[in-house]
Length: 330
Image (cartoon, rainbow, N blue to C red; front, side, top):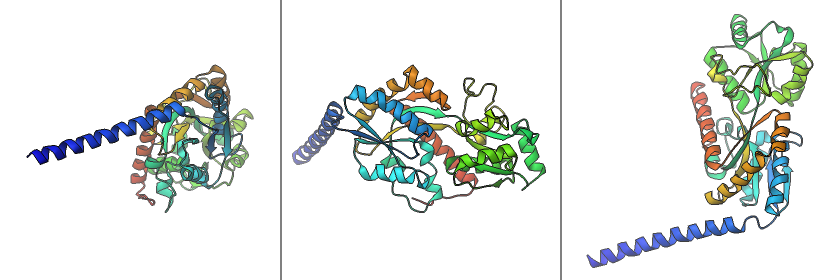
């Protein structure tokens, strides 16, 4: 009996020592970080919304941290080029600034992935929600989402649509499946090239960020029917309803954008960095600049960002189930 008690006590002390050591290591990490230059990897080219947001936030952070921040644009592979570089670095000074749509749908679209989202990509801070919407040509004779659905049902296979590859296309597929619509998808190597085609009526529908759609809207050739987010945005799209309030919840899509860290980064450090990012995002100059690129500032720490990411992952899983698509990458 005494030997059992001694062994149990030893195991307890060992566990306590391990916990204490882990806590001490996490505390030391927060007290000394950053020790050198920080790198932000971005899955988009220069000038994209996420690129602009990253540079605005980085400018404030490097003043606060006393260390330079290098922005590295790594477009390509539907986000995989940047994500893979981030995961392979596995360095707490190499962070990923991205829209979560850059990787949320990958397990359903690719056989092999060089990362595991839940294990390798940890939330640090949400910065903004990119405004997304559904647009049609002004001369198309459709003035609401319901009219678009009715027309598509009346003319199966005759309408076509341009979509941003990845999560946007996935959500659209869920929408057309739930509404039993036959709308032909037209692929574009560069989605920006679809804007004049929409205005000229060669395309009947387009779903993308409002920033991409805006040139056609400003020219008076195309118009927004609905926003994909959960709430209206009267500043950026006055009078435009959400798809949800119009009765099409299957078109819901939040353009979550923020900063993410590697698996070696402790929660304590992510909270510390997250608080600094949230502070930077709340700067009126940053907020106004992001608004000009159709991004609504919506700052939150690792817990809030993590919850939003999980909600998005569950939404995508539900769409995949409805479409009878299994995860390709396990």
